[in-house]
Image (cartoon, rainbow, N blue to C red; front, side, top):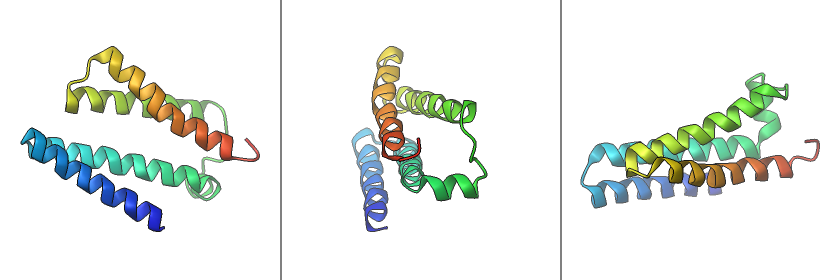
Length: 112
């Protein structure tokens, strides 16, 4: 739990940093939301059995694939809208960054 609290605190610091550097409150808030959502996703993956049983997502297959693709697209679109990344670069970054979280989560699961 301490690690999760540190990740949320880091998200707050990053959001404040974006607000300070870009001079727009909305950019800082969107950054904070995106990083907190990513922290929640990582936290949910680290407690995968509990998360999936509570959300009734115990199946595998198309739902998991849709979640992976959806999170990659969401992060890429946030990168484009907040930081004005080029589209191709944002999707490459998102695929490597978010994809590495998903791959790590799947590799840590003994039954997957």
